[in-house]
Length: 546
Image (spheres, rainbow, N blue to C red):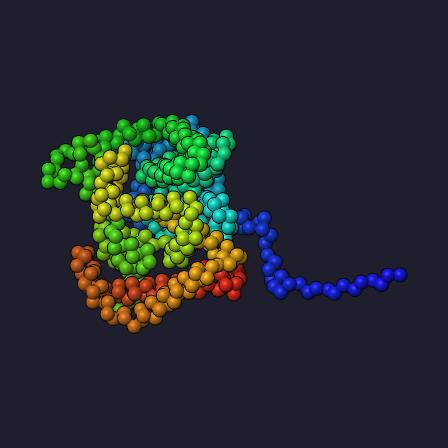
């Protein structure tokens, strides 16, 4: 009888139990999307659940329409003309308001679905905007997931986009139609991408609906920016494929379908926008000037459009790029001061001293987001979509400079259709913030890949040098602070802004504190990523840290 072979029991691999995921992978995407909603509900808990409002001029001004709208509803009249503004003006054609358009079935279903969800929340006027932020975040998640396959990177990118400073404050300053517009941006890119890869009628129909919902946000400048971005994407894809001798039929197909979707969607909204186009020739965006300013060759032409000086008042200055890293470098905007000057009472003060007349906040995206976006751009520099995002971000930044970079801006202002109807060049930075958020998702994907597959010695050396650089700069910032205060105060004084000199010291301290916080965050993030790449930190620790 054969002797049974004894087998030694093998102990489970070290860390195997710890490596088991609490949530099965198939539930990761629903969980992350719920976390996006949870983050928004926590952030806006006061306005949503306590019936609070944002007391800003645009929010207060919108209340002036309340009586008019209630009267129109009571009489069953479709609001076309408002007699209470400028002795009377079109309300529907000026996009100030409108009634129920039952014949626009898809848009009515879209808004009715939102109204149904809002019903379960106390402050419906605030929650509908928060819901659009959620749609934006969920769309970003799906877009980045398709591009990278990294779920945490997609989640990070969605939060980076939604909570980018100048995007998240739109609800606070009453720019709600911008939120309704940006909510659809990721879905448009996702559908165009799918139709480039293969023809599916379902996606074609969804593209028509998405384009229609986008233009029904009624923020024409934001609509212009997303279609400009999509056109740039298709053009770049076409050129890149032609150069590498790849099949370009997919790009042509998606371009034709996008144009067709635009035409159909416009037809569905023709009653609104044909009225707007008819009215525009009587507004400052379309009428010729009453008098011609011969001293300014760039003033409004007889063809109409905004006056150049008015259109470029909110041009982004190259120096303000520093606010991407140090948010309060130019004073931030409106801040709360609490100190000896006000007997320790909190008082709002205007501290912005940049080139623009004023601003609500800096175009700050987060230093970790920027850091990861740079990592993603470098690691995936051969990826065609990443190349496009870099181009889009740079083009948006250059256009935002407005009168500070007339070589590009003036070409568009004079020759690009409808571009001279828009003001506030800085608004196009929303495309940069959109691009940076997605690139940050690529950055997470790159670091995850390096953790699994290893990173070349040169890459590890670069990480170490970057960590040492930021760490050294942080230490140095404590030693040289006093050397910069007088020059910074002089910069505030020479700006021409009416800021009390007693606030200069506080503003400098705030700015320098932001600098040190940014340096510290970058050093800590790089340290964490270095440990992760070298497999000395777990993914859980990295996710919690970021």
